[in-house]
Amino acid sequence: MNDDDRAETVTDEDEDATRFQMRITLPTDENGYTGRQCPDPACQRYFKVTFGTGLPAVAQSYCPYCGHAAEADRFLTPDQRAYVLSIFEGEVTNYLADQLKPYEFDMPPTGPFGIGLSLKIETTPPPILHYLEEQLETHVICANCTLRYAIYGVFAYCPDCGIHNSFQILQKNLEVAEKIAASAAQVDSDFDPNLAAQLIANALQAQVSAFDAFGRETCRIHAAQATSPDKVENLSFQNLPGAQKRVQQFFNLDLAASTPPDDWQFACRCFQKRHLLAHKAGVIDEDYVKRANDPQAIVGHKISLTPDEITRLAQILSLMGQHLVQELTPSAAAPDPTGETPESESRE
Ligand SMILES: [Zn+2]
Ligand SMILES: [Zn+2]
Image (cartoon, rainbow, N blue to C red; front, side, top):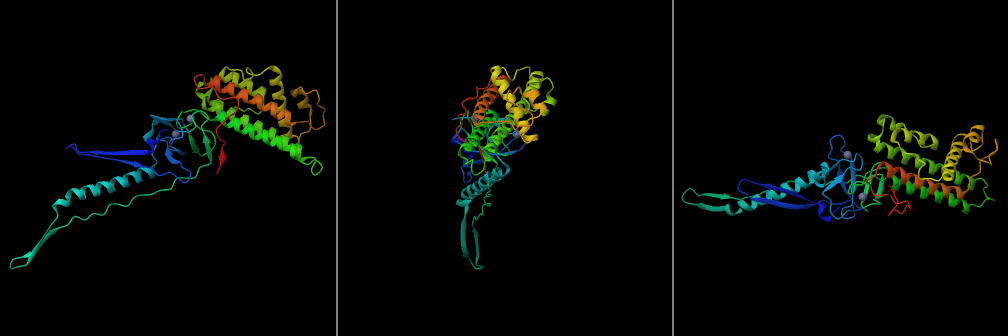
């Protein structure tokens, strides 16, 4: 998005071809963001961007929530529109006053009756309607075009390039999970022998949650391509063989195709471990033995989980995520599997 885009132009043209034109720069908030609102009447949701950080020139912008595309200057918020109009009205008032100024006169009282006449042009421009931008929940720097933008929720289309951020969010969450697992090595096991294991378990839970949220969102935004679009929103990715079956059924693509069989089996086992941790306090049951293909599993014992497994699973989930996005969006730029993102997302 170009720096020039921050200037909104208001033009008035009368029948005598007198042209009144001005450029008004919209103020930014304390973090350099300018508010925007989706012009689609069915959406009208609010977000913010930092002009000058994304594409060098954009003819159209995208709504981060619904993906609606329209000319960039159609994303004014009602507050910004009122602000621009109040400045415009003030300028027009001053302009008209200047035009009438030459007709001012002041005739002092003369003659036997002492009558005088005067005309004085005095105007009071309307007040400028200032406003405050809203505080939003998630700040993103687009991995594709570097635009800084802020939204409610987490998932979004980039307002400049239109790329969806689901893969970027997955990468960031996988990084966070790896950091949680790595912190287990810093724990003094004499002080708390269970803490390190709990941290690694938390990391696995975070990975599965991240992939589930990513998978659901990625399929949701491509639901129109599915054989049964209305069933896509019920898709879950917490059980990988189940997800593989339904993704194959709805989108005719194999979730495991990007993954060597050993890695796929390893990932499925990790997801089964997560299920045990979430629902069985991490204690192995018959169901786990049947599903997980885990040679070390003994019913009644606690499952084992190491930081290396978290690292390996992160790599596999990243490749699977990349594959899913590429297969559902063949024309889109391939997401970066290295996870190099310009900036982390954070909550305000
Ligand atoms: Zn919208
Ligand atoms: Zn972008």
